[in-house]
Length: 508
Image 1 (cartoon, helix red, strand yellow):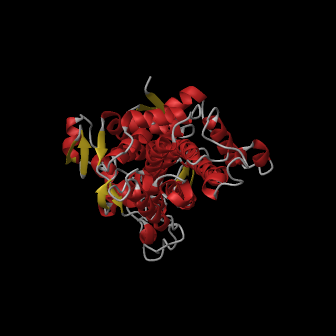
Image 2 (cartoon, rainbow, N blue to C red):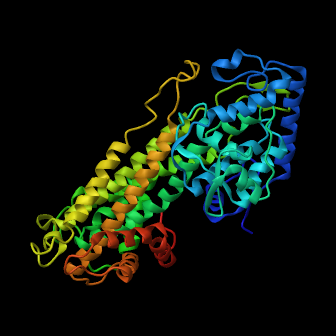
């Protein structure tokens, strides 16, 4: 029905991706509505009693000891949003912004934040009607959550800031008017409830991990073609080898390779041509498997985070208690997204090594740089060169953001996570890794053509045919970036993976 019902507890990564990318509509469950309303009653009670509670009747950060009167509470919440709108840089992509809005709504739906139901519904109306706030990509420390970027989201709810509506960038007030959505005047606790959380880093990272799962399978597919191009030894993928070191990712990668290569006439066995292959071929299950295990770990952490309450203070309506804690701290995501970036960098790293083995005549037994008239033609020389550049960039980006911290708010916030930087880096590494794998696909098909295609495996042959439906064997030098881009689009659109899985069943 192209609809997702949120309750704060059961959102899946698949549902998240459908809302972010495919325009699925979002509704609150009946239980969520009840929980939100009960939570709000506690806030109203404390405001009426003028009880001193952080963020409800006090200032923020260093100003947590400054008591705010009941009459000034609305101004306090608006000032919070206006003053915190300090994001800079390019706007985040629409899919990320949609993901942010969904995740913030899902967190609020848990009923621990004290927001009014009407304010939460405004956020959902914006999401469902396509009002997408302009959120700059930089400016978050990842604790207290993603304050600056989330403030830009809330600006539009107030009729301020900027938004995209039907493909046009405009003033937030105009976007809300065109979408026929009433703006809101925030009251006690609401500004803090909307911006105190990890939803920016989590949206960026959740989309990255969602794509990483498929990319890890593409890495196996591209590798299978390279194995055939180099007459690789499949004995190293025997299940007996991997069952005695039973890491799931390693076992699954070996299974994938044997399924992809089944029926191939271009692979060899131990001792047939050589005794051993180089590590980038022989250790594929160990290399790709470790990255898959890392991706699976990050996926589990994301699944927890997208269904968590991450603002402060938290309101426990059943016991009438408000507790100021630190769930906004992005450290669980920061470490996870750093790990994701490292895992993806290694996928690209091993891919580039395989490209080098194919273009280097001393290693491949094929014409230098995979072109028959070398010298006159450079062939795939600079394909490897470009792949090396991306891999080198990834090595810099893979340095963890989470090991850094700069105190803020007069040292009240004396340790921060840098989780949003970690997520953004992981996304860039993902993009680079996809490009390197596109280069491997293109290079492997060229090498197979030069070797002489004597019959590919059941799965690798499907990938080869798709690449060759969109690119040609290189005889004389051509503009290479166009061919690389075609292969990247085949990966990005999941055309290759879907067709392979239609034939072989789901890869691991």
